[in-house]
Image (cartoon, helix red, strand yellow):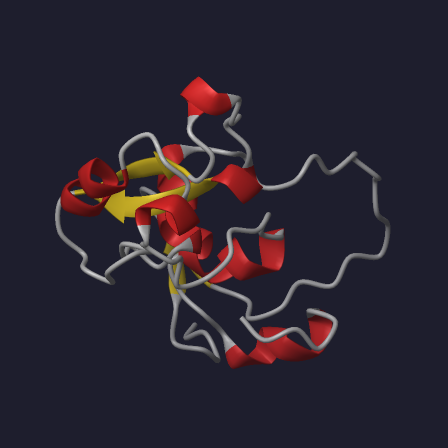
Length: 134
């Protein structure tokens, strides 16, 4: 049997059509703690580009307010930066170093990451995602 969306789920001995949408008839509430703050997730949020110059090479993390000055490792204080910009900024804030941020850092929601974690995007999901564009 062929799936309507063309995808299949394969086991060792069988193949099943992959559904586009699965509707739950009962939901078990599990507390949602948000997107985990990891290096990879900060890179994903920042589209794998330096938030100072825009390059996609030699990336690392930068604390907007340096840790030596009380900055913490939080979503709104971490950005993706290339090694060159990170070194140029040093122990300063972006304003002090004259290196403005392209986008203010923020805490992402899970919808933003849904496509990246699943490996593919399906248009049939849009009505079920509260009208949010992914």
